[in-house]
Length: 260
Image 1 (cartoon, rainbow, N blue to C red):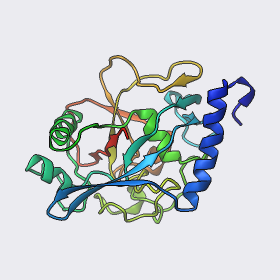
Image 2 (cartoon, helix red, strand yellow; image 1 turned 120 degrees about the vertical axis):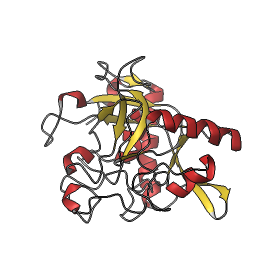
Image 3 (tube, rainbow, N blue to C red; image 1 turned 90 degrees about the horizontal axis):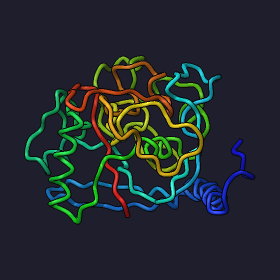
Image 4 (cartoon, helix red, strand yellow; image 1 turned 90 degrees about the vertical axis):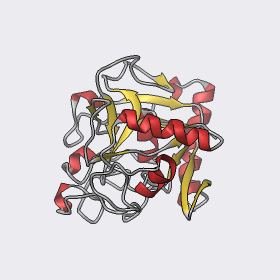
């Protein structure tokens, strides 16, 4: 349980608002934004409201890792997050090419580095009203959990029917939206392909933090969500890993964020 008596008044408001939000989204009142890239290629974003949550995992959680130290995070601003992982047809509509190792229009774009993601976002922002970026690691986990405290957004136990990971025996990414969404209406937050985040990878700071941006510098950039190539434990809501910004693998893609 969160120690509410230690929160400031604004923090208490966010906590209560977040609790209301989860209920509201369970009732299908999810706010979305649709961006048309032309040629029947669209990008759908889901509005995520601010709130307070426990980031990381408790030590008792199965497969807990030392870099998942649990701590309180306050997010004070709403943001949009992609309803799906960025697809190859969306990438191609912006960049004019498809660098993916495993091809398919509705498959998540894959085989892209963090640096390539930045180039994609820069070009996307010049073609639109702008504001697109990668999510922070805190935003990503908050959206993935969607108000839950379990290892996954749907509970503590998993099977291949829940998402695409190594035990699914597919050996490749699948089209986005093949599995059930979480309570915030987001698809494939567990498995399929890892998703780049904006942050450098590092240990979490001690104590409660507000709108964290990650370390100021580092060697590896954070990836989240797990993938078809990794075990299910790496797809837990709290699981995190890091790769060089130049690394390109068939099991890494991205999901876009945007301020309202």
